[in-house]
Length: 171
Image (cartoon, rainbow, N blue to C red; front, side, top):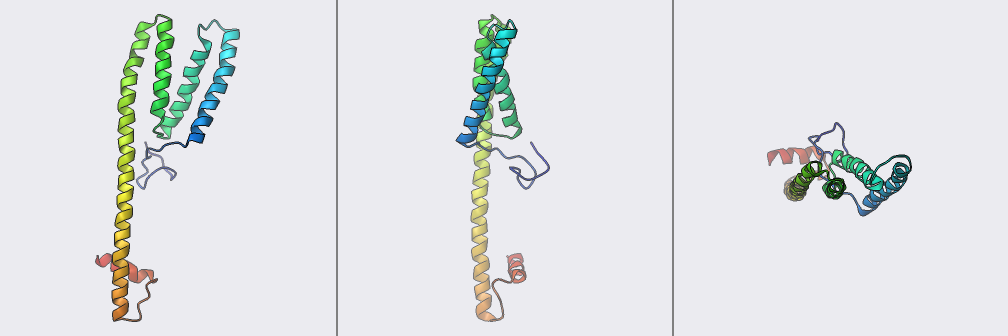
């Protein structure tokens, strides 16, 4: 889960768990439904597929969900849950019981994965809030040092970054 450049990556290059806004989900779902309609009709017309639209749904949905996994989008797990549940229905309707069985196991793994990623995202948010609080606290200490030095020596300029850096090093 790493990539070389910025974006959603943290300072260590690791990709962080993110979420998509509603508008992006609506675009993704709308795109999948449009592609399902087109490819499902083509399959119905030119193949002997028993459930062409469900086949198309699981294919296009999996492509979008896989893209979401590569971006570490939390909601990918919800997409996979729907896709795998539809896959179970699809396989059971064709009496493919042994093919449907792993997808039932995937549903359990999806719940575990979703909870894990959500906890990771929350931990990252708590760390971020903690870092902001620490910066705020350090900033307050630096400002206090500057004012103390300013009272002692009138020549200290609080905007001088070198002085601030030296004071920060003393902490």
